[in-house]
Length: 360
Image 1: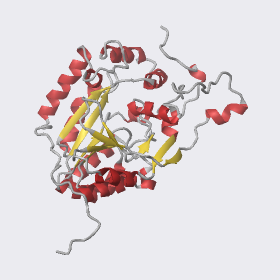
Image 2: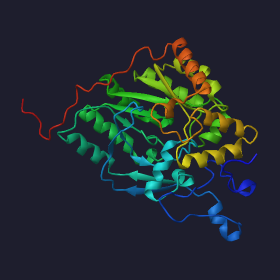
Image 3: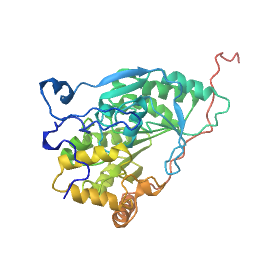
Image 4: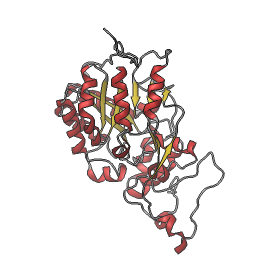
């Protein structure tokens, strides 16, 4: 069988510690890098390079979410690109707007909005702002490795606490525990809910699929510690990829509940735009024995189109396989006592701090 998108074959170098193995053409640019016959002079291009950080003086930070199948109305992202390197990440495509590739560039070239806290403060000071929850890391993980140095997420949370602005967080990085006392203060006023992304218990799969992330065992420890601190916490078992991790739903939900999670969610994998090529290349390089089956099962969940953009179906899929995943999730959510009630953010306490102290 002819593989759908093979590039480079066996001669293409494999970048350990990276998810994407190619830098596909940016659809907004005319030129692209193409390796035909590697020679010594090409080694700089073949060998993986350290992650680079670029500072951006952004004009805006908070964006309105237009998608009806996403649980938040607004989102903010202090970082563009993500060193975690999750192969399935839908946010990869956004890197093309910066003149970069959705592949290796997304993992190796991180854009930092260094003025993010100022922008959030300016946004919340706008008299037209009607308080609604804002998703922190709706696109890329706000606790990715660069946060350890930049502290932008920490500063955004401090602004949120000052204004009593509710925020939602989803992360797969243990760095979130650095801010547990601040998150605890937010939680006491129902201003935060944290979801921990846990996709697989198979360590070998995690290393290939999410190469620069913490282990599943460590993520369950995150869930437990946040829960012990009184911080509302859930898990996102997403994305579910048939033939790779969909069979793990029962155990993932069981362990989530055992460690204090109250909520759970899932999506099925969707390979939009450049992610289609990036994921396909990764799949056939890492799982050649079952790549055909996995690929066709993904297609079957999206009406034959892995780049499914239909609201509702794009997140949950359609057809027999998607229905089996849906039923399995529902059964084990109920069995483990998850999602018994919906978390309601507090929007009533929002305030705009004054610059002068009250005399009384």
